[in-house]
Image 1 (cartoon, rainbow, N blue to C red):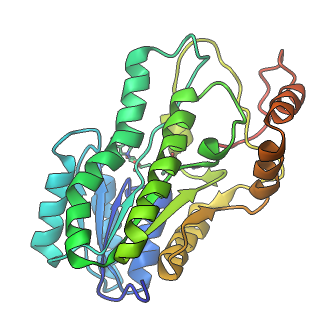
Image 2 (image 1 turned 90 degrees about the vertical axis):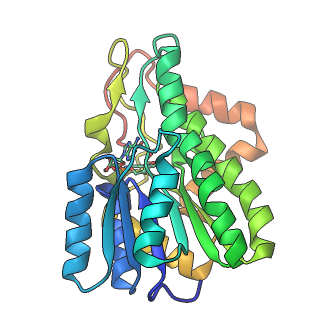
Length: 276
Ligand SMILES: NC(=O)c1ccc[n+]([C@@H]2O[C@H](COP(=O)([O-])OP(=O)(O)OC[C@H]3O[C@@H](n4cnc5c(N)ncnc54)[C@H](O)[C@@H]3O)[C@@H](O)[C@H]2O)c1
């Protein structure tokens, strides 16, 4: 997409963190923004800040885990702005615990919010984009979906890996039809997500993706997302140092697993990183 001026950008999880910063960044490029979140007060505060800059914005309260959420979002967007040009499926939650301690119901909650929300979004927004023959979709995954660096957040990493595969397939399908797809894979970003983590069983400590990755600000990532939309870039990793890790795993996956295990002090619960 060459420009965001007067385009309509819809973002879920936009009351906070990466979604909020992307909303502000898109507004600075002249977009009208739909700030969607389950936190209505937070979403309205972001929309108010955007309107104060002269750009258009509305807030819509939805829980992306609800079946009807994206119909509500589409209808509110079309009523206010008349079209949808960019949909960013960004809302996500994180759960921690050892594999034997995370209940099945919690797996279902995380998969429903993180992954099935993208499926729901596609069923509502894709027909609009296909009819227009233009538009862009951004799906927020994570380093956790690109490579394994812990064993205590498997619903999260599984949902994020699935989002990457889903996005790649959508890129195959949609790029020839004039619709762009970006999969955002952040490493550690300073947001509110840590305060909303649910934990099961004893504290497992925190194993991050690696000490080499500096913690990005949400504003840096918001700018990166807007650039990726404007350049029609598929893979958006927030740190290129992830590439050698992926290469080493691809060249010898067993060795990657053994090296990762041996890099941990398995008796320790001390934090070794801040990654999500
Ligand atoms: N912060 C990181 O280090 C990091 C790293 C990799 C990926 N991510 C991903 O980035 C995305 C945004 O997270 P963030 O770090 O900005 O966190 P955040 O907690 O600051 O923002 C998440 C927003 O999503 C909203 N939300 C949560 N569940 C929702 C639901 N069911 N329906 C609607 N809104 C909901 C929250 O209210 C919040 O406003 C998530 O998908 C997360 O997995 C974050």
